[in-house]
Image (cartoon, rainbow, N blue to C red; front, side, top):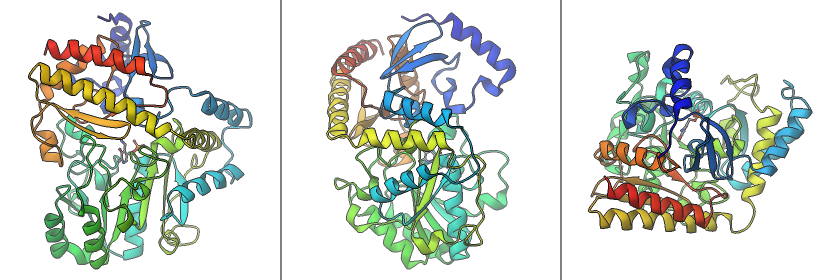
Length: 435
Ligand code: PMP
């Protein structure tokens, strides 16, 4: 079992200076019984070392971006090179074109791209562009889908807020919340009803095409095809939030993933990206059909800007990350490791009579303590959070780092090895035995 006295004391110090001791609420241990989160000081490949020199196998992957493992040499070199040439110009650079082309080639529905600094900004701006284009105000989203912390989408917003038991956020005017309609994921009839009622005022339907924020949840056959059809009939735009899903399951996005239901039948009008495309540095991007993107300044009336947007270090890291992901066999390998780990978890759970539902999509999966399928947010909420909290701590004490939330996925990276998986399965077996 790990001892973490330095994390404990740093947490006490952090509490004096940083609100809640953390710079993102999902990093706190509030949802897993409280106490000091682990302060990490170094990360390499699949491993973390904390300030007390304990080693952990990491499945958090920084909530998704670190798909090539920590400190991947190709990405690190790109960042160093970029830093040596100056970190911020406030002018266009050639490499921005390169990353834009890479994104467009991988995600053909993006005729035009704009880089921003986070997934939140990317999503926030797709909404502005959709409103500018349609001259309507309402947005329809799905319960439990998290689209960043901008006002409009922080309603019924999944993992972070729901983990903390904040269904919503204070500080969001009722007039803004009023513009958002939330329906259950995978429920086409509910969407149809919402569109019948509010379709004429709806600017866009926003969706995570593969959900990453209340577990990993696939859309059911026909759901996205129906969503796109109904949305277009209402004269609204389809926005895909692929901040988590892009480049996670294959080199491309959910839109272009051939194993994905309806992938050929659907092309969103706008797509929001982030996480992996920045190789671990801050980034976001949005893009879509040319005539819609031409709403954006300086071409059109929808304003969006950013001092840090397209900064050379983030762009260089993003290019380097995508280059790594172009190596043949990368996704298959992560999938193989994820399958082995997922079946190890299921075997242990079965052996100890613990209900567990695993949703695996290639190299990522969620593991919910429940005996029913998880296809929407209600089902994800109806899982045993207390048991997850215990499991989380038992794993942490054996050197396995998971997200401190029952909703979050486990992410395999290109750095994980068979030995890491075996060690994790053994740790999980011991944890399940004592649950
Ligand atoms: N959209 C989705 C689907 C996300 O999962 C997240 C972050 N978890 C965001 C948007 C927001 O991205 P960021 O944290 O970079 O603002």
